[in-house]
Image: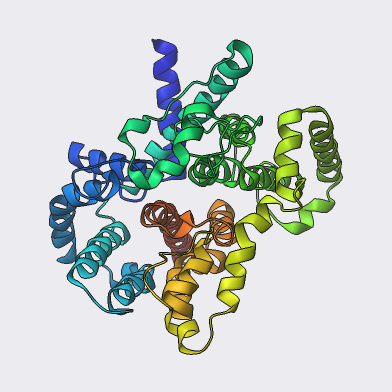
Length: 438
């Protein structure tokens, strides 16, 4: 009992050092809203009273969020809206592009209200990230249990309640039940579980920000490194190609480009003798895993090659790139159509945005991520970078609930940047005042 309380206090202390945006919204209803928003990237595939469970969450909490927003609008800093201004314009553009309808207007205004509430600190972003952290912990533990059950006892531990899924999620049902099927429905000998997520890529998209937060934040410590190891194991066992690449890259940054105790990541630190030796050992470890661990071998082979001559990367991008290349003139600027009906191949986030909303949609929807590259530091810079890169391979980065998820995390990064500037200003002011009094 004492030990569990100590762990809980340690976790609370660590999170108070890592995240804090919106923490003043600490009533039960605030935390309940944040809790369900954190789960929405998972729940939007399930049945709900309004369209799906994800949108049901937005609608149910909408009156509460509007009330909080109206109270905040009496007194707020207009600059805080600047961070999401282009995302708001993106949602407005989605209403008018290709013909406005009442449904499109209502749907997009629902999103705009939540964007405003997030940006102005009306929603407890800290609790969103903290809830998602525990979900990531649970997923990593669950996938380890799935491997133990499958290879140790010969059965697949099913954690997805498939009876509650929407018809659009049918392509993932067989793999959720067996761990052995692709989205085409064909069974394979390669075991690819994903805990309670529908597929490995979904698990990767949810967990990777927490790996980067634990591993690449400044002044990292043993507690964060232990969590990073657990998240890494979860991503490797998921066999997600993107997950493996990001995990290896994150550890490469941490072990090869870190300044040391302060954990400042810069390229020049790669030449430190300790970092050079560590990177060599990491490379040896990766090569050893590739040649000696079948699961790792199959996962890497799936990324870079296959017997059919088509790797996972080309499989996700070849047809969508060809489609985008065929778009010209006004369609390239404004987009072709809201609907992607009839397109039966993967359209990653970048490609589908070009197709539906053109270069205008790209400019507006990527604004927060590009700002993260230009303004943010440490873990939030790398989260922005990964989201942009992954959007060329996965369609989920531009779906409503994963966008909300990443926006929440990057708004925390912007808030931390603002706090650092305020602290720096106060320190300089105090120093100037002391000189005056001298």
